[in-house]
Image: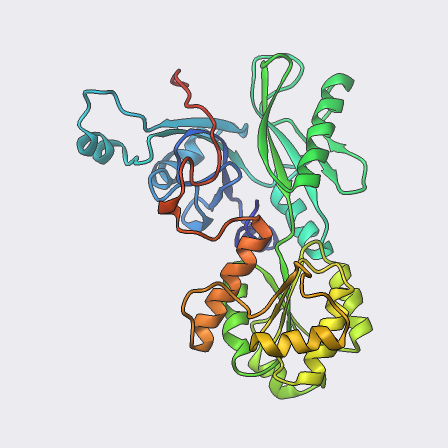
Length: 379
């Protein structure tokens, strides 16, 4: 999933007409710090945004990326950090700057080529429109049917567009792109009996958090949600200059009736809401509006009994799964900043359908990916 900070950084570079290099993880075998879709941007002189590892690969990409792409064509570089049985772990890792015992394939390309689909430019448009899309990028090919760098894109509800490929291959790519849009997940796919390998990248707008409350305790939540890359909309019952000054970091400050706000919520791809005005009647009206909307998560600040009373007065069942009250994960939070952390963490877990448990208590891959390790070392 494309990070908002990277999308915004690429948009700035396009406006400034400054050439840049995009490095994208397209396939991972075994253990790695980042998953496919992780991306880093570089100009010829400096790092701009993002990462493709925990710091192991960035140096090599920065030193050699522009040289490797000097002819203008995308290039895939394979980094293999698996160790021979007799190797001294510390010495090998120090020599190669690797540390995850996996194989990471990274596509390097000069961004902004004329006539080529730019996934980051498409992502910028999708974020603004709250619309999903998917981009299929060929990163390895031994078939004359298409070259490395061939791209096809699909926007939700729209027709596919991109480079020319034959009808059979196009149908297969469109099918996988539409599946990525539906699931909101990226993956690697093989075509032509394995002769063509492509990365199917799901472009999903970040969550849009609607904050129904303008008190000082709402400020840490807005700051933290914005820091993790979400859109944040503060909903205020009355237009006040002080509110806009307090929430200058928010993407938007809205005033409007519950019906008007409901329309904004329903227009989002993944809307979440936090109800925290400390005004019982106002919170109840917002809660009623949100339950009738398409919002994915409703967090209500305050004691459980207070929310239970609201739900009873609204004839809403206590088993409504989207309502989380008291709000947040059980992190022992007391201060506004701690409560904000617990709330953002809970929303993240809900949106990703994650158990919100300690990683040490789980088994298997951190990312839930049991992809087998690659035995052959790519060149």
